[in-house]
Image (cartoon, helix red, strand yellow):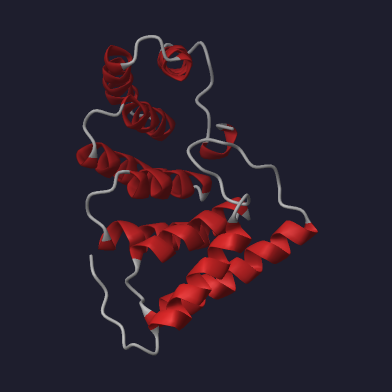
Length: 192
């Protein structure tokens, strides 16, 4: 997607985007690499990054990359509803990248909206049919929602794709234990 800006806005956008990236570096959670709670100084950096990204969005509101980045910062701050709002915008704008609905699904689940998490994890699979991790994520979401049969179908697909993956194995065991009543069904906030 190309964006047309007046010449005088380009350096303003680029400067804010770069400053936001510098401040956000090391704060955001990327593909499952955990991040402990942000301390005082990192929260300050995060808020400054958001300010710079917000300036970018005031110039190009439909810039999916900035929506993604601001969502990642909100996610690192555990402000899940704000993160979800920006992930949702990015998903709406950019129709191919599977990472966008995957992250929206995580934020929806973290916000307690399990049905929306299932919708986004399904969308992620539609965008990338050959990613076992997406099938596994969707299976977990379905299990939390209470749809064990469909969850089994999706985790079995993930196992077929990546049979030696430890996460797939653990999720497979969890879903089967929940489905047979050997384990209590986890709620959205009990997954971590």
